[in-house]
Length: 194
Image 1 (cartoon, rainbow, N blue to C red):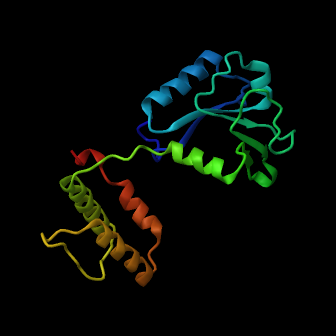
Image 2 (tube, one colour; image 1 turned 120 degrees about the horizontal axis):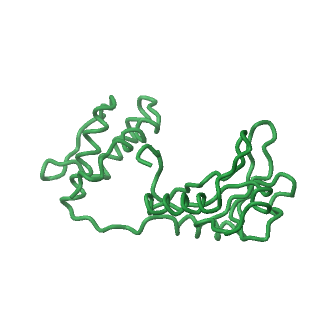
């Protein structure tokens, strides 16, 4: 789990399928796995991905964690051949491209679900915010970013809106992509903020 490149609020799933050697993890093993991932990554939603055959012929516990992602290309999108509540249905893999549908009645329902996955906001002191900004600045400077100009607050520190504003201006000026910013953000060590 330490190598899992994930974002808080993201979805993690246990892929419970029959292997090419015709083996399938037991219900107890897959239940334990989903529970363990939930424990190790409490800021994520953890679920079960499985095909409709294994679900209908091998499942005996119906434990899916936070969601069931069912692979069922034999039924129309949005109508998988299972009775259990499902969140996603992979209804096609035509052309080596998986296509899935989610069980939401509207965009508002989808938005509400997405917002429910986000962490509760945490109040940070000005000192803690400054540590994050300074760490972000240091990481970005190590990824070849050169700011167009410098604007510091009255105490000689970067403010978060100013720093982010200059990053956007710099990306527009030199064609840098957001992936460089994402890479720098991914390197931040949240434990550095007390």
